[in-house]
Length: 401
Image (cartoon, rainbow, N blue to C red; front, top):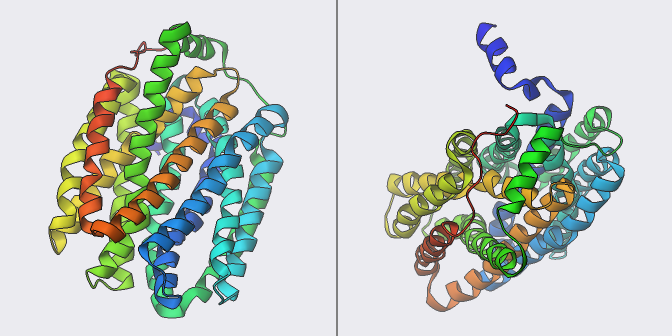
């Protein structure tokens, strides 16, 4: 009890129903999202899909989520997130039930449509998590995304076992479990739009000013956008193609799921570590460190065997995923009065650039081999690490704290 009390005193948002609802909803949404790479690998055998076709459907699902997130963010800023959060869970749950029950090639498009639920949930979830965090915005946002990363980590391991045991029909059960969670979100998510505490918003405005004005501002925003694109290309391609890469190596579905779990779980824990260090030492510094450290394991894991693949995959996930919440908070600080819209724009662009990257990776993999292309994705990360040094530094301590 003493440890729990200390944690609640240090991070009071952990006792907030608003934060718990956002985190729980994120866990369920991303648990369903985590099944998509495994399903595409299974459908590639069932329907004879090429790497290009796998990349095509991965891209379309990601683009569907990406392009609609700014709209859902705007709606959450204007009307609040309660109904959006609840309907997002219902939408995804129903479509995953359908995926589990329908055994034709058209099921691939159901996966694409299901991603609209993910698009609706994420902007309002990120906004509610950040606003519930008060002075600890980066930490609260990190824990929110950790809930999602935990689901993305645990989901493939459980999903791999379920697919190997029960086949695609297991998705219907996973979808059904989302429905009662939708009711929980309806109860605890605020009905109307809310605002950020005054002194925290003042610090956000100061960081936005750090991007400068006029030509300098647009140059730095362009650098930020390019950085996000490069990081998303590498990250999303690893998630989409890791099961396919291991399938080509002869790994069974259970081990494919285990490897994807290693990637996502280390990412989940790293998000908390990087979020805490970013609040202490600065977001830009930790962003550069994470991107630079990801280069080595990503370059080498396609060329090793056995347990070394799992180890290097885990390190790749930790360093690529660890900086996720830092990028979201940076984007929110560019639009401090429209946090859900900023979250939607940032997440939408991450998903969109990741989708384009997935398609490009699939085409290149058919031409040069999946192992060669996955290893080469270390180059975009190296460039992104260099670009991060161009971003403005923020005040590490929030004024008024």
